[in-house]
Length: 329
Image (cartoon, rainbow, N blue to C red; front, side, top):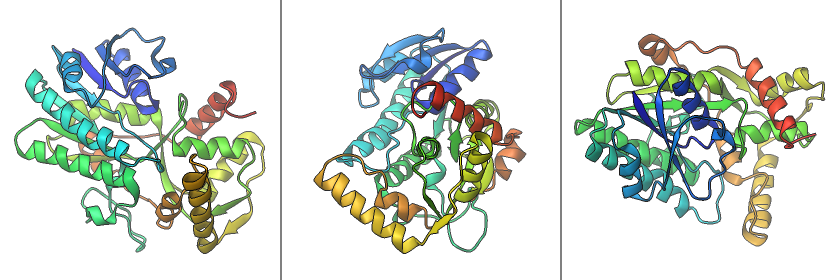
């Protein structure tokens, strides 16, 4: 079996590639000319230099492949040029789908995000059927991922064999950017978490999440979406877990939403607009945090045999990796 993987140089994609290799899969990985290769340097896989925006490079990479894992995404909650996220996440996905059709690929496994789901304040857990529209999406990242997912669902309705996985917030080693979730860990290790806000998210071990992609390849119903999540935790609970792992103090001050919002406005204006560098606290991230992103993975458990483990081990691996690689003392 031969598979083509986009995003293998990144966090989740590198784990998907490793899971595939552990099964003896022949791999071909899309690599941009500017990509850091740290995460795949030790992998026995063929590299194809290209870009999601370059249709021909995608066709070259997919030639002779049975499955395509489209894991790559521009995952940023702030950008000086928001159009870049739409170019990669929406148009890039359009190109992947077109290249897969032209190349005779058997199935495309598309990595979406739990960010495309609908979240309310009614205390109910979100699932794949929770109502949501584009107007509910906050910021360019969420909007671009929602639009890309709609493209994939339209392709499924037209008869293309595509399935969608919606990871929550993976945590673990090899988060080289790091992702916004990884930054929570790094900021905690650097003692830059003097206070916390009343928000929550679902953490999943990145290795379990990668395995969920393989289950989707094997068992998913074409055109269906599957949330791949682990534990629903408040931000305070996550910080307390990090404190137990590291021995560092967990913040005790809870920041009111109004104060967090004002901080996001000021930091986005000063750092983002005036100084033209990424804000530490983006306004979009504060707005997203107003709702707890708690979910249920019951559908994946029922239809794919999804059975994720606790996240404590993944948090510990993340801490060890960030420290070993110089992200934190």
